[in-house]
Length: 231
Image 1: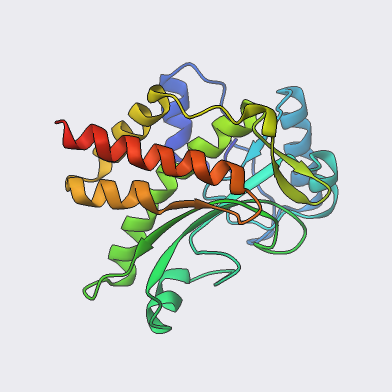
Image 2: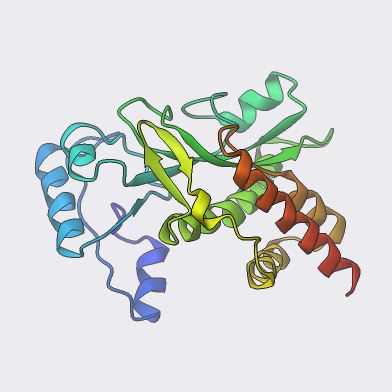
C-alpha cells in the first residue's frame, strides 16, 4: 500500500504479481486523517497482514492505527537512534562531527522515532562526505538490515515482549551460509569496493539487549568477509 499514487513500488509489485494499491492519505501532510486511517486499517486487515513494514512513509502513525496492529509495526530511520530523531539526520550528524552514522530498524510507538530499536547498521563518516553521499551510503545499509529484520521476525527469532525487543533463545542456531550469500548479493548490487562490503558486514549491530543475536550478526560479517576473500 502506498500513499503516493505514482510510487515506483506499485509498478514493481504489479510486475511481480503482488497485490498493491494506492490509498489517498487525506488532507494532512504529516499524518493520515481519520477517514484515510480507517481505510488503511481496513485494507491491511483484509490482507491479513502479520507485520506492517513502513518504508518511506513520512506520516506519523498514532492512536487507532497502532491499536489495530499492536506491536506489529516497524520502521527504518536514517540515524543511530536515539540520536537525531526526525528529519535532516545526515546533515545533523555531519554538523555534530560524529565519527559514525547509520540506520536503525525499530518498532513504532506513539513517540516519534522512539520505539525499541531492533537492529542498527553503522558506518564510519568520511572526510569527503556530504549529506547526499552519506544518504546514499546509509541507504545501502538500510537495504541490508531491513529485509534481514523482516526475515528474523517472520521466523519467530525477534518479537516485542513487555515493551522491549526480545530475541527468541530457541532460535539461536548459527546463521547458515544462505543468509550470508543473500547479504553478499545485496551488497554487490550497490557497492563495488570489496573492502566497503566487508566494513558494512562487520558494522551491523543490534540493540544492546540482543546480546545473543549479536553473536549471529558478527558471524554473518565473518562469513561475508570470507566469501569475498575467495572471489
